[in-house]
Length: 249
Length: 327
Image (cartoon, each protein chain N blue to C red):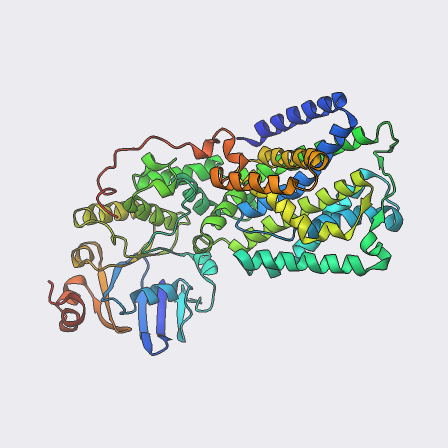
């Protein structure tokens, strides 16, 4: 079996009396598309925050390509190839969509490139390519504060992709999007990832999205992994039906 | 705007100002020298503002540059004004680089209060140090400029020229920085530092860079001002000096380099004429003016300039599928 891209071993995290992660061990092979499900407070976002370095586990280890990244800063972890988008898009509201992407491209360059013009051809090309991938060209020169929530969401994901990460974590990519628009949004996101050699983990509440866009599903409950298998098997799992989906097929 | 085009504009501006100086009376040359010199310190504050920091202690770097220029002839035998400016700039930059790692760990009001604390420590040290003239300060030996001795007939104009050249060059360099990836990153750090770090860049390093540039410009400003006045005193590091520089920075806003020098000139003109005609109430007029600017031009005088390329707002677009119908 191939060595996993990311390996979480025995992660534990408490916030006072609340157990957010209780002995979580997950291996993620390269190239996989997996989703994380669970009710509110199940520990999904805590897991994402630990993998991206925003939270440090009380115990356990996180390995990226067998390198221990448990105690690295979120900045260093991003530099090593784990990037993320956020449930509430984290953008620079004053800047335009294109400028936000130019910032993301600049952040992925070396220190010397920081002193070159922000819109040098290579950077602009990469930023434009990302806009095209997510079909956001029409918004390129508009300040983010003027953009709709769905566009911001896509832009947030595009920024995370600018570095060409090995592992991309999407925290609820369709939250705040109307029921009719969820599928097209997700299709647009997955379509944009097609040419990128990126492993994708997304946190999601919509079981139809989970079933259609992931190869593997990990279900969390009360800080523990209660199921980890194919979408069909996880949806059929009695614990998942009891604690997560409430009987949804 | 490309660096080449902005350089051409800077050269044109410098030539026009140098020629205009020939026609200007001595008092006006001095007024412009002082305003451009102060404008450099303000430009530093604006660079920092744009990078997500705020300083109430620019007086420290202003004083460092001034004292370095004042002590250069006696301690190092440096007579040349250009070398003194370079020395003042480097000393302030060096101290800025030493302070930066401590300061960038803080944000907002904490960052600003720490800069104020540092400048007040410097004010105290300068006031109590008899070797540096104590609270009376020290006089500065009249400099030479590139080997040319200054006398009462040419001193004002030569210093005016030097100040214009340094200010225009600094303004151009700052505009190049603002247009660079590092400059855009600084703007992003101002807006969302956590996001910048999640992209793999260091918000602290970006803020530190802005702070060191702020210090360099403060030092250059202090060394020019000291040579124009012929005297330095601890008051350069006092909070009142820093407050006045912040006042001009808020007046200018952080969008445009020329706005900084325009705001500085405006303050100098108001101060000069108000001191003459209503010496006891001019600060009241200035305060009222500031309130009006904050109310009607919260982004400062820079927002009066024509929109730059990056700020073109297009008409509303029809919202396509996927992007509409949501929060």
